Image (cartoon, rainbow over all chains, first blue to last red; front, side):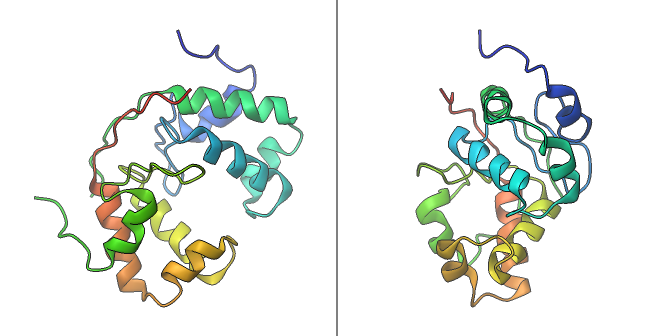
Length: 85
Length: 85
């Protein structure tokens, strides 16, 4: 069945897509990404070690449990190949 | 046909896999990732804005052209779904 849709998904989906296939330039795909990598990257964005203001604004107020729920969601999605140029 | 195999691919492949599907804990998949995101992330790892010693050691000596070749390679690979837990 996969993970339930996170309550905080909306803000992420605006740029990364609800299933983690991004449509916005410079924004990474998240679908099928390694769970441990996603968890770690989210914490780095939240605390500013990865200094991306949009990400800090989006997830700055989120708890570890929120981030974990989002990481699990995106990691569980199936990636598709968009045929990058 | 897709991009030619980069001459610098070997070092990357050790952790990220030759086709960008990582088998090492904490290491992200790169297959099918957005080209512009990969280019930018590589430069951040090279100059230390993303502070990952393994990455800096691997790509510190590489030119922008090297990084571009690697970004194009991984972006062009088809992602597969590994069924993350």
